[in-house]
Amino acid sequence: MTSDRVVQFVYPQPQVSADSVTSYPIAAAGVEELTKIVDAVTKRQLDALERVDVRVAKLRNMIAERKALLVAAIEEYETLASKVAQGSDIMAKAVDDMHAMFEQAMRPTPEAEEAEDKKPGA
Image (tube, rainbow, N blue to C red):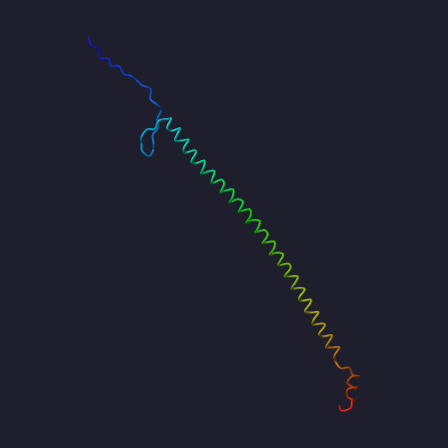
């Protein structure tokens, strides 16, 4: 009597996942290794980006500080220019007043006119 019984040997298979690019199965140990490689590569890139972010933040702070200084300087200039304009107006009025006073002082008085008329040869 022959037996139709088939004996099947089952060997333990490693866990696998599909590689989306090639559709070839990748062993679980290979996935871990690839994950470590990708983590290392991305960590370097992320660290580099973080350094750039820090430098950009510092530049933003410097720009903001300089902007504040420029705004303050412009406001101070406006205040000083206004004061100078007021001072110039005061000075111009003072000069005009002095000019008027000198004109008044240089006008001939009636006594001076009489004396001028009494000079010989006049």
